[in-house]
Length: 162
Image (cartoon, rainbow, N blue to C red; front, side, top):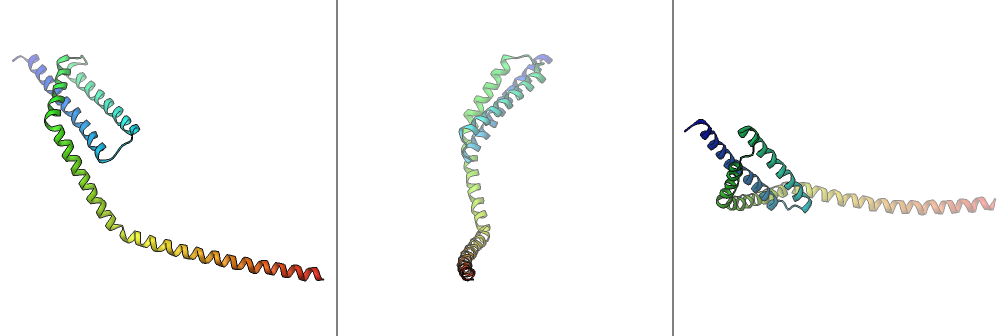
């Protein structure tokens, strides 16, 4: 084969790989959305960043491999790569990796809860002690107020008689 034909075939393979890569990255986003529930604003922001990343990646591929000219067989190659990945690996990958991450995070959450039991115990005890101290402080303040009020009244009586 001649050199231009080989380079065009290599470019087609790169385009297939780019399609697979783009779909793989989007599957990572899908997995993260299954593991951590997102609101619509965050989903929209992620999609905008994803498509900006895709545009830069495709532009870089076109620029390096075909000097910036758009080759329709490259676009078709990327679409075929996306289709192949989507029909073969995507559903299995998203399902099992998200399930595995959910199980792993649940397991790690249990470990963290076990490790934090002493801290929760101590904070509970300190909250109770602080509440008792605050209650005693309120009682002491009430007692002092009554004593001061009665002392002021007595002082007024004594001063008025003179």
